[in-house]
Image (cartoon, rainbow, N blue to C red; front, side):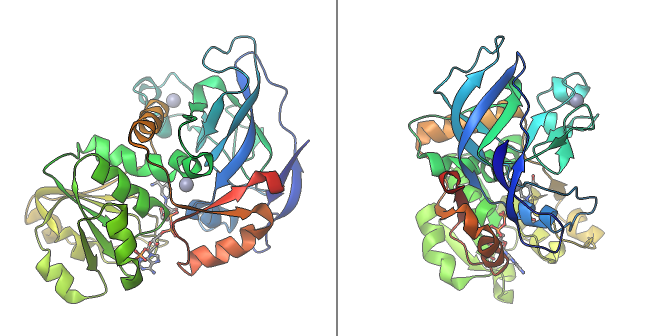
Length: 345
Ligand code: NAP
Ligand code: ZN
Ligand code: ZN
């Protein structure tokens, strides 16, 4: 049995819990977890805001730790290596998406790290608010020992979720990128876009975050609560990454794109939002979405972060404070990712 923290229902706080981890098979890696990041998606799911939640639920998909056992056929890892597990623990590996390293779009449905099942479709998966995880080698990532371990945890979701669209839309030197919302995803988007040579503008509702945005790598900071911002920055950006989970008017933000610019939705507001055709037609603009990233791309991100010494700005807390952390995240009071210290479990 592995110690964990779980939500037993959508309306009750997380409590201490125990989960069974499987005996490692030939391709499995057993990771003793040191840290797990707290993503806003954990709250959405623990509170069943997306529907179909499975309880008991052990959230957490930003896991890092040390390999303690490997199956006989494992090639990539040995005992003592640092390792990470992100949002997925398996996929069908044969469909066209999987064959293109886009496991997040597995046409048979990937196995998510929690609030889902293994590919047998019956064994529930439990996430990283726990002491240990067992996953197949193909879905375990290498984490450089050069990086601060607690700060590396959020790379497994907040990092890859912002890296993938930057790479897909070929963000780089000479391009202007707007990042909407300075939270867990947003602060990684700023750091990563700046590291690729983009000129980054932070679009935020929080005046108090300006200094941090600039320290993280933003060249400009603009308040989206001020109408003047949308006039001043009209037609400015090649790419906008939108991380907001609250209702907001996409049309206003689309007006900030250059001709041929793209706005990518990463945040998940609870209700559908109307989009005016003219907001897209005038300027051949695109509105797109993006979901985490594939396994190879996640490794590419981790290697990029090791090469550029990039980690997340974290507030490390004991597991017992996870419920308070949820409340603080909802109040927009986090700089910029909570990470659970699993040694306290
Ligand atoms: P977070 O740390 O709470 O950050 C969200 C940010 O959005 C806040 O820091 C705030 O930035 C802004 N914001 C919050 N409430 C707002 C409001 N009422 N109006 C305007 N802006 C508001 O959350 P996160 O962990 O980054 O996650 C963000 C969203 O992405 C969630 O919906 C999550 O489920 C989703 N997500 C998606 C993927 C994917 O694959 N697409 C992966 C992970 C997470 P300012 O103070 O700067 O305005
Ligand atoms: Zn996440
Ligand atoms: Zn597949």
